[in-house]
Length: 130
Image (cartoon, rainbow, N blue to C red):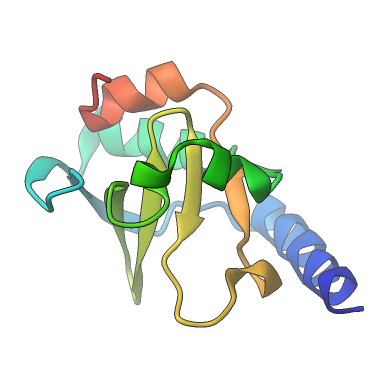
């Protein structure tokens, strides 16, 4: 029963995002697994490209995160700190294009696992060269 409610919430959110794209992203900070700064994106063409690719991500099977390797399951992931006009969030990112929000509560309700459609292009944009 719970996963069905989560899917419904996410479906409604996807519909909402179509009418209100993520143009309110103002800054993105990328950190490596050791929390060292990789890159900051805070304007121009890079921020526009980030917004476009981020808005185009799709939901993925949660089992893919664990299969990406134990080193990326938690502490080994890249961190994307996404700042918006009124809020911010931290996302864990794997260079294969998998991403999920870092949350205290079970993320399955609102934001399970997502996949970027073009990981190679996204990695280049955020300064990751695996």
